Length: 99
Image (cartoon, rainbow, N blue to C red):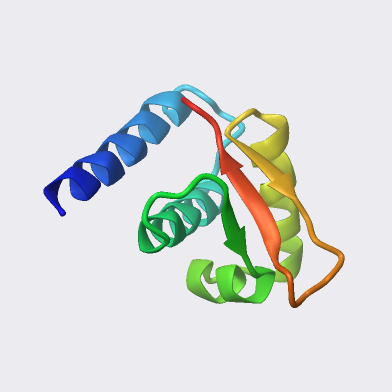
């Protein structure tokens, strides 16, 4: 348990170190990323994780438009890799990149 907590803390600390000088990142990007980190935590720190957009939008308190824009940005900026699924029952894959 303590090892998982340390991994989670290190992951969040690495993210904040990476974004502190990245002026492209706003509060919506941070909300989405931290929501995904929490989902990764709940999955036992798997990489990739399977997500469902509706669930992420509810947990991150964001609209579909904001989710889509921020996910696209985080992928383009090199923080994540996102593989959207065409099958809503299957879920999409999110890969966390080393920061």
